[in-house]
Amino acid sequence: MSNHSFQAASDALSDFDIHVSELAYPFTQFLPVTGASISTFGPLLGAGTISATDAQARRVDELQFDLGEGPCWDALATKVPVLESNLATRTSASWPAFSDAIRAENVGALFAFPVVFGPLEIGAVDLYCIDPVTLTPDQQHEVMELSAMVGRRVLGHAIQAAGTTTDTSMFSRRFIHQATGMVLAQLGITAADAHLIIKARAFAESRSMQEISADIVARRIRFS
Image 1 (tube, rainbow, N blue to C red):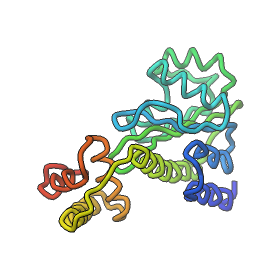
Image 2 (cartoon, helix red, strand yellow):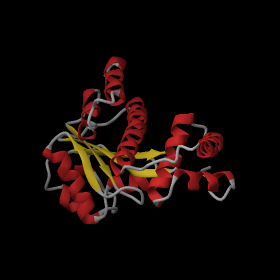
Image 3 (cartoon, rainbow, N blue to C red):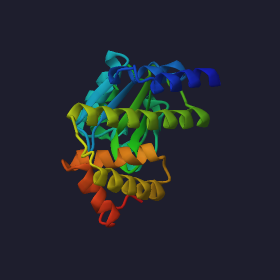
């Protein structure tokens, strides 16, 4: 597919008017896949499918959640894509229950990409095709780029939905600013993303951003 198609997908995910339930659709704009889904699981957010392009994509997620195994689990655990270009000829002994279950579905190829934000594990992007198909190295790289964008959007939405508040006193702002700089240096990310990392840690631990920032400045919390 053309760079134009990938850019269109990237622009769609950057549009804050897009609802989280629609985040899977841009992946089908530039890839040779039938459908896509985005799921959350792991220690930070609850398990569930937040976006799916069709019923089959949602079914792939449901099987993995119900059975507790499958490519999405491996992708998040290893932080690298899991690529199954032809499920019919797959010989690996991993995921025995899921492998048996997926044979009954109209799925020829399945790809799972981790959704992370800095050190935070969020979930996975699953892509399926009814026929065997491969993704080029360039396409894999592009999906990883978009998955990072998804991670930022999903995390921000979860924090906003939870109504997490921030102490806005001058002291608190200075403290959070200092901690943001430290996280930025540790992870090599932007200031905005470092701020979101602190907010996410506060969200995960049900603590204030000021408390998390104090621990970061005191080096009780490190993200490197």
